[in-house]
Length: 592
Image (tube, rainbow, N blue to C red; front, side, top):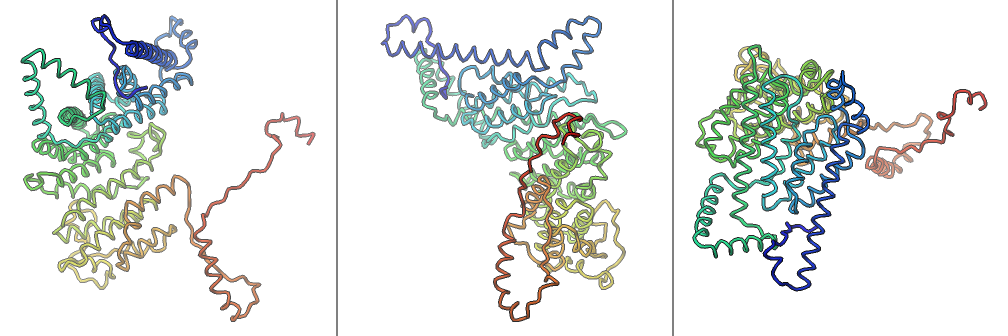
């Protein structure tokens, strides 16, 4: 299919005498569009007939007069048929490759609606991937603008239809995450100037009919040449930014309004909060300064109830605020970062601890810590660890922290949190604490080195208060980082190496030991169920070689051991033939 929109000739153009090649091209394009339209109609019909299961079963259930409504409602939650799933996957692939061709609106109408499918994860993920791929490849922004408008309208209608009721998911977070693929680069002020220039140009073209006809011809020529109109691109990106920002603020406002007197919130809107905050954190540098101030006010109100929010949503509130404060206009925004560092300090004990969030997981992610999408609570805690590393980077590494008491409180809280975390969460937190301690260790007023000494040798006033909500009131200088002495003997060698490196004040070997890199590698090990172990080479008790022979073979033995360490520590075991005994009836085993 061509990568441009085909315009069929009008009746006036058909009446004009043209060459045979032109007429042949018109006939080919007309037949192509007719066949493509019939193909899309076939795929849509196939999906509509089988999206709730087999058609014959659905017809039989509809014929039941007494319990028709109950059975149909129960049946609509079932998975689609294989043929229907194949049809929606084909439509998704067509949207990725032919989003500039004809009948784009028909494709978007189906894909956007099924991107929020509630029963089949494969259908939902394929539609979301198709939308994300289209957003990343659309250079002009017309298709992206149409898709964003449809998605924003659907989200608004779903929220209004729910009326604040508690229960099922209104909108899936994966639908909002597709907007992260939008390559927005135009600031809102620049887009406003481009919009005014386009309006002036259009007003000038209305003066004569000839100029209007020439403008239409010029527009068609640009579509055929696949050139990018910078003015039109700026206008489209401005409309996209306005739509997604309005939707993000609507999500934040709905979460803020659904808090009741007892502190509970609607789980369906709370699940959308991390996705909305990730988008605001990415596009906040393009928003107008007045909107940025309003965003910080809303985030501050949400963080007042941070202990009622899930850790993922609360930590993304802080991350969005810290990224916004690092954006344009940070010198003119009268906001103290302390308002967001104190909630971060109080959230650290909740991060990565599965036992603390097991009860909350029943309310927010399903029973027994299993989410609605089938993922365990460890998945959400890992995402929270990633956001926590970014928060600490924006708070202490990209800006200068002047309060040494607050710095000591965060270091103590990080080591205490790492002691109770899983290994794949503990190692990145210790590495992040090493980065922070290494940056402020050279300061004259810093007292980080004293926290690595014995508590009996530390001379300080007062006692350490771990229950304090403000890190400046915790008096962390009166204690030591004794958690490192325990984690030196951790079963995971990476955690033990990080704890030993911090206790010895060694610098990180960047970029290999960066907290983000450690989190990615250890998270992959958890997914692949890989357990790292230390190798100890011992002499065999029956080895009778003397010392001289051992010295001669020491170099070659060391080389062989190094080669073994570099080799992949996995084995593929070929299964033996069973003779298909498990398929035989039970009476056949007596004959073997």
